[in-house]
Length: 280
View 1 (cartoon, rainbow, N blue to C red):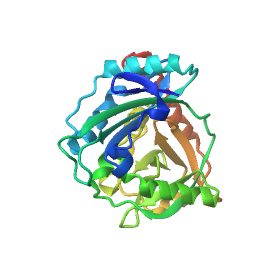
View 2: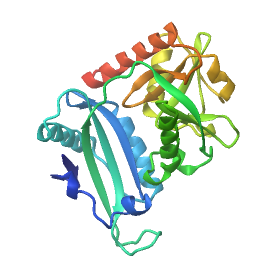
View 3: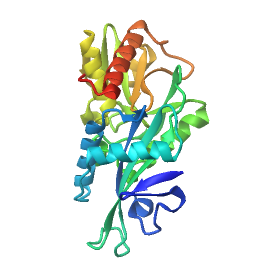
């Protein structure tokens, strides 16, 4: 596979140095987004969050949307990818003196890679993980390479239980989100989703779903979600790859609802506008 690294195209097998601190100590940030017909969805929003994470780690680097679009277009051709693709942008620190604290001699590495998008899934099954996400962790606000161990453990726990995804609770026993998605609960004629203060990720798709729901007259309340709410209500998972996907607790819980389907359709319309370049 060919990837884009610091403005150059190279084989993925040699793209990461043994001195890369993202590989060694998790010193990096990343974004994942959907690409359709060469167009990345909501690129400006993803780059904004990537910048926030890079600034938080002191990388002092900027990302140009036009350069990312050009890299994506070239990678589609070089890798002969057709249909929807998943773009992963990763920014890490590399080199310098050994140790946990970053060295002034370290450089910043920017890597862009594309993969075929997975086929859509009709329904996601969920468990509640034994692992926790602390609500006040600084790395909840962006995608940090080194902060993903609890998410990985939760996803492994889900796979062992025969589920597709795992929900992580915070230290108060309330829902923070899924291992790689945000959560919405359908309550009556509206939605409820955990706030960032509870450990929810400020997801791009989460925000776009809230906007899409409002456009069809459905209000989304941002408030704490107790685990008991999951057993009796339809659920929606959101991230850039799966979009707005219906979900249910493993072996129990409410089936998808007509309202959840309407909201998912509204999000898809918003997504198509983003791909077309027309105003939302």
